[in-house]
Amino acid sequence: MPLQKPGRRSKHPQTKQNAQTSMAGRTLEMANSPPPGTVDLSCADARSRVRLVLEPLLRTLPASRATRLQQDACLIVSELVTNALLHAGGVRDFQVCLEGQVLTVRVGDHSSTPPTPRSAVASVPGGHGWMIIERLSDSVTAEPDARGKTVTATLDASCMAD
Image (cartoon, one colour):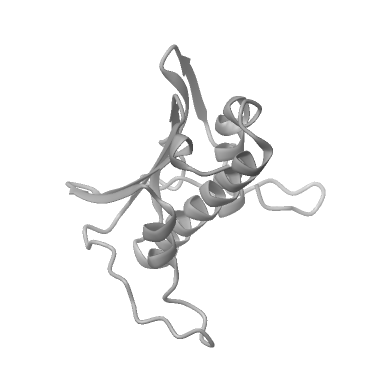
């Protein structure tokens, strides 16, 4: 949540979070936050939620793999959320789920236009995000729906070298 001056209230109430734990894995899901149809989610919030869901798995992995998994997952989620905020009218919904050693991140947005790589120039900001997502993810899909699209990226820790 952004920092505020003392005594000031946020223009948006606290985001209602629905955390679920199941035998198959851990899931943290956010939806139905103001403004209507948009989740009040920053990249930092999304990274924190990824770390929370990954925490039990990270304790079981060799240090080098745990570090790489956490860094890759946080970069992927930052890029997905940034893309939704900058190019697709905001984050409509957000879900991060861990099934065994496979992390799945879903970011719904308000645009049905599929993500497209832009020509990136090393000395110019922008145009690198989608390439980063594709390179770091084991799989990435964008599925259009009646309200926009959902981009899903997976990362399999069992496929990472130590």
